[in-house]
Image (cartoon, rainbow, N blue to C red; front, side, top):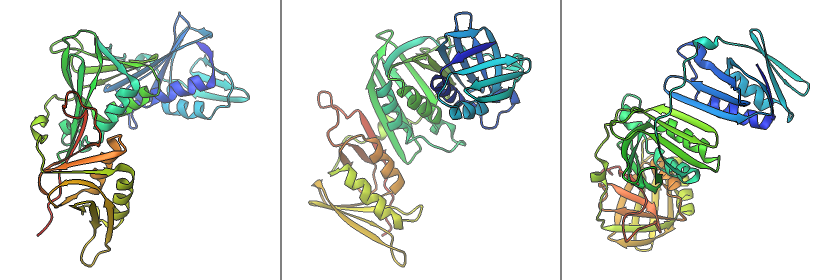
Length: 380
């Protein structure tokens, strides 16, 4: 087996495939990256750890068919460091030789016959713009839990009804919900999937850079390929196992009536929260006191360091004192993708909703992105 390819094309493909490789593989071959040159002069790079698979297909001008398995992380480091010249890879017995300009690397090969077969993609369900998909997933994934002892909270729930996809994630302290339009293969398609949050975020971000549409492959209820979801775009495809579909009934958590509304410029609000939070201990809140025309941000108390900052605000409602985990508040502000942040509140102890100040609304309906954040109860 041998092939020649441009360095940048190879390095990008190897880096993308290497994302799915396990840091601590259960068996040594799972640290490998499989490279195959097909009879059609295509190079396929693939990785699989029994949970997530990734595969890239590239067109070749020069190649001899064959298959080789080499250390994926090492190949990624080598290709990233190569000079900007064509790369040759030749398999010689139990070794693979990579040559680029005057640089030459010899890699030991791994037994290809021990490498698991990549799972087949589920049926194609529909398409969505890669940039829209990447943005939507990024907005929701910030609220997914990181505690593996509660696996259902580490995922992003995807609900599909016709041409609407709803993404939701929660870690019990905040909840993010985003609705977006897509192009289903069948107008009455419906499905529900719980996707590992980190895997989905990494995949959406990587595919968002392709500039092409993302095809989502997912079986409808009871269909073949159940328990797995696939994404493909511009010669790249990835699959991941789904989590248990159990998830909180989150729609009932979203308040629909509020007693107060505040609108602030997002940038200055973010900077002020960051400054005030410098004196906040890890689990102590940033306090917000809303009154007509201004909001006072405070952190720290008693014998500790303290910080106070005042911002102008467009405020409608009775005066209110409310407190939030500053990291959760900052992540929500970073996710709304708007120059104006709208915070809608009921009382100082009930969930608040953070949205963009001028949300995309259909017929006066709900904004397409909502970030619910639980306040921290203030003592006294």
